[in-house]
Image (cartoon, rainbow, N blue to C red; front, top):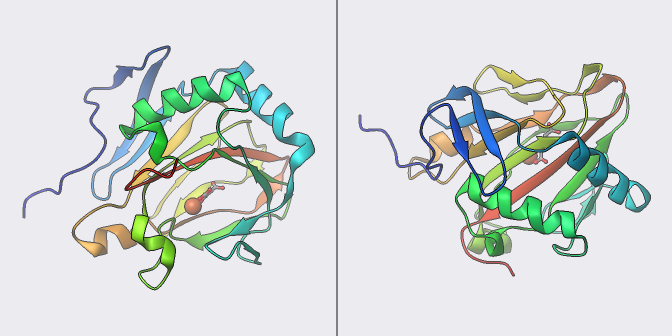
Length: 210
Ligand SMILES: O=C(O)CCC(=O)C(=O)O
Ligand SMILES: [Fe+2]
C-alpha cells in the first residue's frame, strides 16, 4: 500500500525556522508522530508560564467548553497577540507545522499538579459536532518544564509515550484519508506523580479561524 500524504514538510534530522533550528529526535511514520527538540528556549518556557500563571482556571474541553472529568488540569488560552513573545512563538510553530498562523487556535497553556491527567482522547471533533466543519488537523504539544515523575504524553494505540522535557515537543497529525490512521492518534496526558507539568498546545484547523 502507498504511504499517505503528510502535512509535515521537513526532511532530515534538523530544519531551520526563521529564528531557531529544530531537531527531530524520534519519529513514527503512520500516523506521523515526531518528537522535536529545541522548539522553545528556556527563557520562552519560563515566560509562557509566568504570563499564564495568574489566569489559570479549570480546563474546559470540546465544543461546549464544559468542565469535564476527562481533563483535570487547569488551563487558559492566549488570544494570539497580547504579548510580543506569542507572535514570535506562533510564527515559529506555524513554520514547524507548515500551516498558516491564521489556522491556529490561540496557544493553550495547561498545568497539571500531582494526580492530574488528561485521559485518552482525540484532538479532532467528531462528525456530529458543529466544530468538525472546520476540524483540527494537527497538534503540537510543547513542554514548558521538566517533570520529576509521570506526565508522559501517551498514545495507547501506538504503544508509545513521550516524557516531558523542557523546550521539547511532540507533533502529530490526523488529516489522513484513511480514518483508521486518524483514530490511532488517540492520546492523553498520564497523571503527574511528582512535580508539576506545564505544556503549551497548538491545534491547527483545516481552514483559518482568525
Ligand atoms: O498533557 C499532554 O501531554 C497531552 C495534552 C493534550 O493531549 C492536548 O493538549 O490536546
Ligand atoms: Fe490532545
